[in-house]
Length: 246
Image (cartoon, rainbow, N blue to C red; front, side):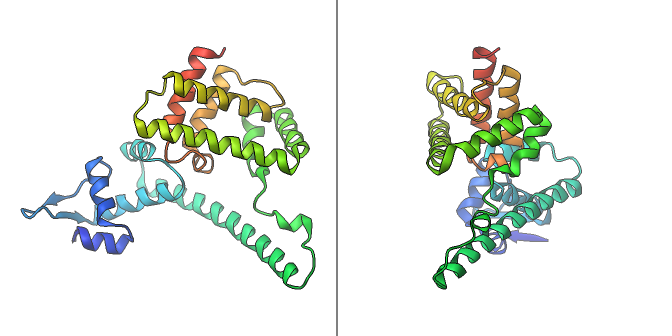
């Protein structure tokens, strides 16, 4: 079945401008363009668009979406993977909503919320499994102890630094600055310091830092912190690791 651009926009809940942009950058080529310039899509286009929107909702940048679509593999398995990631995110969001509801209920009754329930779903330790698997239990324990010792102000300062670094990378990516430029290297060094703090002051090796860079792209839970410049961040950190670290 074939669809006009306006119909696809209505079905998918996106603007026709977005569809034209996806066509222009090669993410979602139209089946053909009519003589009046209107783009025409088919069912395969809709399936591809669904994957694009799923990846974007998971925080994956356009460059990385393109990489994934260029190596589609088994589309059923790929979509099942996307679904499992969405299920995990839904569970986390459900916990966050429940924790907020708990706090609201307590405050409406003039009571204080139970501390152990106020931050369910907000816990940074949801990444502890990855830390243990990649760098060992000792590193995971040191990171958890460091996080607990920071206190509220310290944790917020650490989060703010990550947001500032991500914003800096996004600005450089938008301006087309080389990931190996001095400006990108400066941000990469800040990222290194940010990671080192969480590792108890021990700086990652070149291989470890490159591994982190790849994880920021390949794992949507991490990628969301650096979207839409995840691919740029990966390239900048990898370049820095190869040239500056051992």
